[in-house]
Amino acid sequence: MERILLPPRFNGPPDSANGGYTCGRLAALLESPCVQITLRLPPPLDVEMEVRREGEKVELYAGEALVAEAVPGELELEVPNGPDFAQAQEASNKYIGHRHPPFPTCFVCGPARDDGLGIFAGPLGDQVASSWVPSAELGDEEGHVRNEYIWCALDCPGAFSVDQNMENPRVLGRLVGEIYRPLRVEERAVILGWPLGFERRKAFAGTAVFNSRGELCAAAKAIWIALG
Image (cartoon, rainbow, N blue to C red; front, side, top):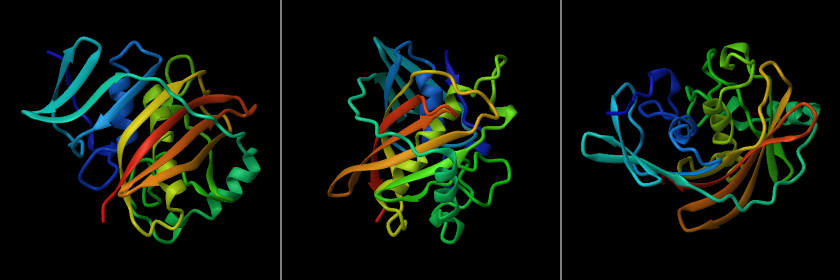
């Protein structure tokens, strides 16, 4: 029986796992280059969850509660050109989370973490951007950033793109993502997020990861659900 445990280090909100990290762990269970992951419940931390397979679908259960499901996806997304590293770094300096963090201890975007990814997506016009130099500990044996951390990078910036001031914090509902080429550790990368529209409590966003040469490494389309 396949099982997944999400270690406490990889939290988003204080009591549940980061959505991007959860998506990355599930995406690794499918052979499809593009994967759609839907989060049905806040993914619990430090709990062994059962993986159930049905055809091409993978479901993740905590007891009898469906936490998430993953299926092969198709990413229909027009990705804008990314800014250069200096522009992304300047945007990061304006990150609202430096003053009013929605989730201060989030593994991806929490400024209170000294062991997190430090992806701080700040305003760049109607988009958001972050500089990112992934540390060596995030790499595989070939020196490439492991895929679950690329999925993390595709997560949080989308939330800030649809609400740059974080007036109404949101949680990830669905992420459709694809990794196109590897990103090396300690490479000067750029993360971009941009809004795609709104529908009641739902907001739609695109995100992308670019390497130091401005090449697109990964992209995703997300649905974010307002908490309030």
